[in-house]
Length: 225
Image 1 (cartoon, rainbow, N blue to C red):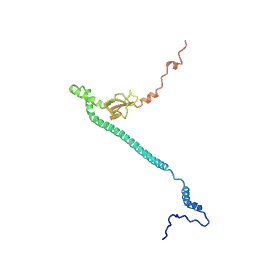
Image 2 (tube, rainbow, N blue to C red; image 1 turned 120 degrees about the vertical axis):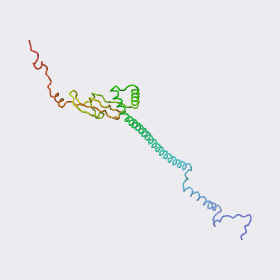
Image 3 (cartoon, rainbow, N blue to C red; image 1 turned 90 degrees about the vertical axis):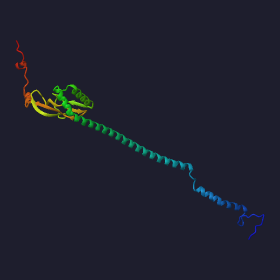
Image 4 (spheres, rainbow, N blue to C red; image 1 turned 45 degrees about the vertical axis):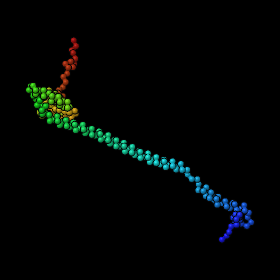
């Protein structure tokens, strides 16, 4: 065991021929080498820049998610509006069909009322009831059509009788056997009519007749005195 002599400090070994001042740079060499390695690795990125990049990425993700949710909401809103319009259209259609079915069942009664009126039998309490029924039917949109003398239209007329007449230029309704009824633009029963057509050959005969010339043109003008 080596005993240290008090009052003496250990000094680094100095090669022979070297002074004590030469040992100090050698001791400081390891510290300088460590500093050089830190400088060669380059400066570290500031912590604030890394945090800003992370926040920007998160913000982009949030914006993308917001755009997707907004598009989903707009699509759902458009689908809902289409659904509402379809339901409203179906509701109106069902109502029109129900009213048309009801009024169709009342048409024979209205025909009886019309025949009773023509024969002068619509009197007393029966007259009041008949007029009230016609008023209610009109409020529900029922319209009567079909008049004598109007041109025949196969879309609204049903010809039950056919004849020829010299005083018509086209197929004409000459008698209304049963009036027609419609609701708005929908015909629930065509008017049942008797029609008359022009006499066969009457039109061609009229076209073949030469125009009568004026007497002055035939004679070449008035005679000179």
